[in-house]
Each structure stands twice: as structure tokens, then as C-alpha cells.
Image 1 (cartoon, rainbow, N blue to C red):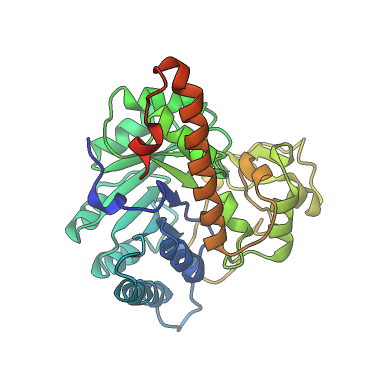
Image 2 (tube, rainbow, N blue to C red):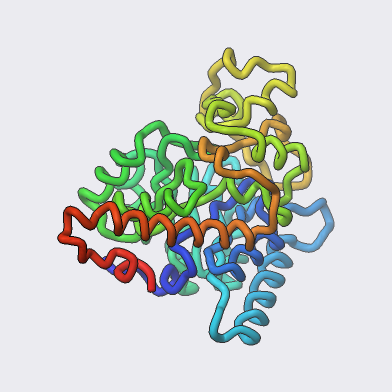
Length: 340
């Protein structure tokens, strides 16, 4: 199945994951201008009581800035953006946010923590597509049955709420019954891993933790520094903080007086996204991150991250072409096949 036009003509086959609290218009605009899909959770657009609706203001700014960029750079247009709807019963803003996103004709809708027919229908009503994140085949089948256009396979090692299945197995099992748009999430932080995701059968890579350590990200400097200094061994997988298992930085857990190696279990009934208001949530200083952070070595603008990913991606293609030569008679043309 060919990809929808919304996901074509990107600089790299990459969608930036919507990072809870962290993704903001500055980051999304930078990602889109750099040529990859930028995304933010609708709940990140918070407002105090009596203030104008922040989500409306964010969508207006993103839409207008990307339109101006496209007019000034017709040969290098920005990538489209995405909004994540957290489809959980505790999200009391969901209905309102769906209406706003439909009115602003959001091109890509990312849904998580529940598959809902009405969300898919709202996206389709304004010409958008929906991508639903899943951690196993059972959830993948349900999402497709309820009208999702594509899937995000959240494999072992992904930041935030993540599954435990190897990306090799998860992509293989989903591709056995689904030929639509498929993204892979899980420790993808280099151009090499973007190419590996495609080799496994995914259409695009889904990258989150790498963009926490960017100048535009709404994260405190200590959080960014911990990403830069960390590696896979600095990640703990726990359900204690939200009721659903996720990956977090051990250093942030210790800073709250907890032992990351001996955390109690919790359950999904503890998850609560409330109304998305301005009041901070508990555990707001417990910082999510995936196992791929070892590749992140400095805090830079988001555009520089995309530059690095592209250089690594092209270098990986060249290496693969050389490595494959003995098995294809030396004339495989991989680089020409995948990128011009």
C-alpha cells in the first residue's frame, strides 16, 4: 500500500514524537521547517481559568508560520505537523480539542491510550489521517478495526509509555496482516536506526527522546543535561508513576528520593490526565526517556539534529550498499533506490 500524500516528500522518513509537556510550537515549527513531521500533544496547550483557549492559539501560530515558510521557500517546503490526542477517559478536554483540531484542519492526528471511532471520523472529516500507537498486535488490530489509517509500533526501549516486544518481532507480526502506513518507535536516535526501521518493514521512524535535548524543547536544563550524559543503562522501566509501564531516567527518580531499582508496581486505574489545565501533575519531575539516548551528545537546535540524522542516514545507505555488494553481484543500487 502506498503512503498517503501527507507522509510523502519528507526530507527523511521521520515523525517526531509528541512529547508530553516538552513539545511546543517552537519545537514543532523547527522540526517541520527542517523537513520532518513535528508533533505535540493537544494537552500541552494548557491555560489557566479565564485565559483564551491555548490550543487554538498554538494551531494558529504553527499554521501561519509554516504557510509563510512555504511561500518563501517553494523549493523547500515545510513538512506537515501532527497533534496527539490522548484518548483516555480521564481526558475531559478531548471533545473540545477534537472540535478545534478539525476546525483548523490538522493534517495528521496521533491517537494514544485508546482507539475511538469518533476521533478517526473527526480527522477524516477535515482531510486528515490518523496514526494510532500500539504496543502489541491485539491493540493494532483494534485500532485498524476502529478506523485508524496507520499504526505506530511502540517497541521495547521507547521513551515514555512503551511496550516490551522487540521491534523485529512487533513489525513482523503487524506486517503479517496490515499493509498500511506503519511507523516504528523504540530507541531510534541515529540515521542508522532510521534505515534499520525501514529494513524491518516500517515506513517511517518515530523519534522522541533525541528532541528533548534541543534548544526549542520545553524541558529544564537539568533534564536536557541528563539526556546528554546518559545511556541505555540509565533507563528504568516502571508502572509506578502513571499506572502504565514506561521508561524513565533513573537520575530523575533518585532526585525524588526513590530507588529506581526497587519501585513498587501500580496499575492503569491510577492514570489521570485531568482537564489538561495549568496545575502541575504529580511526578512532574520524573523524566521520561528511551534507551537510545546514548547517541545524544549535546544540546543543539532541532534543525541540527535533523542535519545529523540525514548525514548518518546517507552514510548508512552507503555502508549497506557496500556490505550488500557480494550478495547482489556488486550492482544493487540501494542508495539510488531509497534516496536520490
